[in-house]
Length: 249
Image 1 (cartoon, helix red, strand yellow):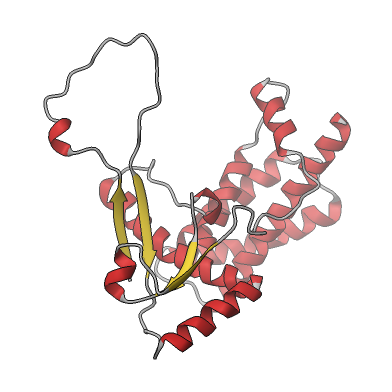
Image 2 (cartoon, rainbow, N blue to C red):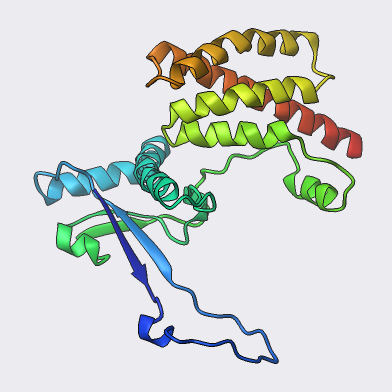
């Protein structure tokens, strides 16, 4: 179950009939905060079970991240529905790293809606989800903004395929991946022979997945093939970024 609430929003009556005004200084304007609470469909049998669950999450990063990822899939499914219903492509999926605060806890349903728990744990800002990388995104950002380096169309397309996969939207991911692969093969002529051969071989699997996506859900085998192909595209792009970073250095 997903519960959405807005905190600190301005009263609507103050916005009615509002006109523009002259300003001499651009001071920050308070903004509302959205809170998403994801509640498990099956309740804990008692408080002891809830405490044991929370204690387990504190001690196991993989289990904790799996719990957070499951909650994000619920939230992003709602955002996807809102995006399509509203016809607004600017409504985007979210990640745990974008949250101001991430809390894990248990309590009664009414209390949870109001942000109260029998017991809860607020994750530290650096919860270990971001992996270290040899890439230098800040340096590349500066190079792109400074027009010293171009971005590739396939980079954005592969990112979109990954977002769809992570949000449990394999049909959309398959259709996105087909275009992403064609763009990647065209835009990276300097791929090694082995890597290009792997990606060329992925054309069939991605094509089959995309064709299946046009008529319904993907079979498990097609989805596994799609995920592997997207990982290979990501690997090719990482290799390119590392190569570019090494040359710049």
